[in-house]
Length: 494
Image (cartoon, rainbow, N blue to C red; front, top):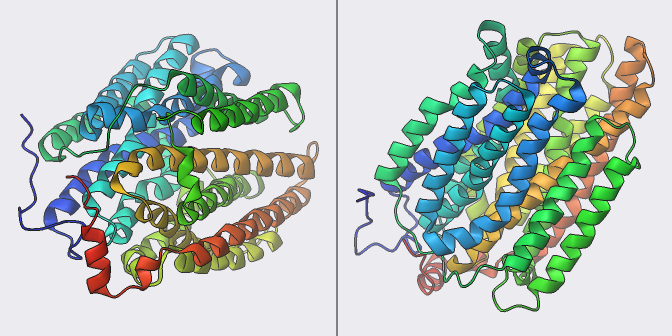
């Protein structure tokens, strides 16, 4: 029997503006699981060269350690909404922790590339569910009036993992065997499981209904095909290569078929009718564009330090750190500002700072001051902090509690696909601009060119932010008493 804490009977979490200690306790447990699964992705990216050498595999073979993980993530995320409604969010979250931890232990003892890829798929099935189900639990517990502050903290792992991952991975590879990249997850997973079993509440996510098998087949294949095509840019130099373009085309067509199917059935796997909600639709598009702007640009700074400045993996990770520091600086302010001014206004302010902070990077050369670059990255981090979470918070706050189980996987898929597209586009731009065997000066110029593209992607994010600003939930403009009354009308099930 779970010993999860229960809220006082006379306190409606949706109506109260104060965040009780038990909410922060639940947030800490959810963050523990999230940061374990997200960090693992960026840590393994650093280890591909070592894995290929030890397992006697080429880059085209060993890259399946990453691709297999991404494909399993893309395949399992769509089913998390139905699973949370059918079995309960807590039970699905606990199961995902078990799968991820078991997959991590098996990866550590893999003796060949084939077995490692298979175990990574198992790990990805668990990891793909941890993030959306964790967000679902926190959205249910927090309630609409407190969601800005709580989701700002819960979303920290997603923003900081790409920065911390290379540092942690470099430290492990420099001092320990590569198996510790996976073994380090085992004790964390055990602690997260025990803490989750004792702390997480049972929540109500709505009626599950029958599993939409047709929708599952269409959407899982669509997302997997799209991610596979984008991942192949690591081994192909062109966006139009058959191994790249055909999976993406197939993925887009299947996604269209899923949307048509979802509008015709009573209980689809994911409810695409949510996009009729103007706030959710605009916030979702903002999340997609910000995913492309954020994670796409993430590859440029580390590569610049390694390729142009010839810094080590550990030093590179540390030099990317100011961007994460900028995010952390605004975390205490972000939730309150989102609740006070609305997600659209805060996100627009953040994207504007992000764009302004990207311009100086387009003029970086071979000997630009590292201190100057670090200050620019700090400004970008501030912009990212103000932009990312408010958009996602606005999306959650615009929905009823029974719609959250559909919303969380959709937002996660959009964020991942956006990040994959941004990464793929900037990687191709950088590769084409640098040419064959470039000099340091030409390579620095190629990075400048790529950052102009990065600025363009960031500026595209301004459009959905403006739409979100216009469509912002009118409850944000009500008096506190009226907003409380309206929130109480649809309390979240905890």
